[in-house]
Length: 402
Image 1 (tube, rainbow, N blue to C red):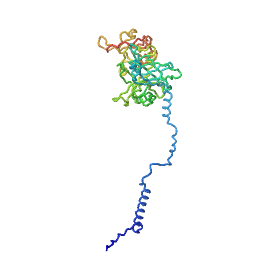
Image 2: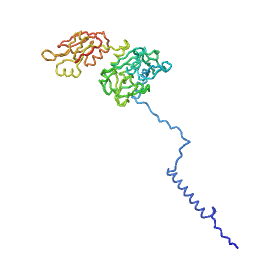
Image 3: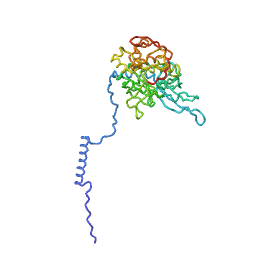
Image 4: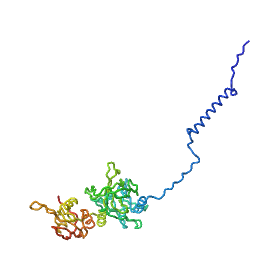
């Protein structure tokens, strides 16, 4: 007869020892969760259904210098234009197509539609011999229309050019013109232009240098250039440089940068030069700057001679007279070496048309307001005596070797 094996006892959930273990474990987990929750270690939800916008903190009024800067931009930005140039080519069907070349900035000169920019901005699109040339478009700040522009004239020696658009006078806002001969280092400046084709860009800075010299597109030296630290980048060329009164004081033209981007130094052609060159370009399409036909000693040399008693009064000293010039015809006396080896000082110019002259650049500024064929009156001191000499301005001749 087979013997039945005893079955092992099975303690299920109803077992008292097991129930107590489960309760202890659950209570321990709940305690740890509560501790983590209260101590901030429990993971928070990523979402908050009750989220609402923050209350706005009142700003208060703008600072006075901010108001002034904003006012300058609002007053002048309507005078600034965006210039684009294209090359005309023919497609496979012999139809003309425009190939974009570049872009730059400019500004409205008057209500007749004349636009001023840099010569290098539109140089490659200007009319050429054989009728070839590019296309120039001008976009006004306050108009959705882009106007086709005609090339009026350009000056490679000053990097200035004039365009003309056929736009309604109501859309043209001529820029206010200031002066540059009284600028001071540290003075605030403002630039508006289209760097990288981002038109109506506004930057601020100060005059960081005066009397700089840069090379023009034609290889000539442009003197009395304004140095600024306002951000100027490719595309700013041809745009206006403004003073704190919102007046034009220069035309941005170049930067110093090993990378091609702004590095803290920019240059602008002084408005005194602009205000003399632009009218001549509008009159004839070319720049034939008038000239007295003289070379002057630098101001520091003249000042040294005055300190040593060789010159008795303020003025600028004539160094040389150019052959074939108006000055030679009028008998202006240059500084020269005498037969006994001494130096005889030339005429000291003390006034032009009755206005006192104390610096060499004052002569250039006065002549720059004239045109070839005009006559100016020079007041000179010669041998201790005062003379008034009428000089007829002529196109600038080649300066002699000095």
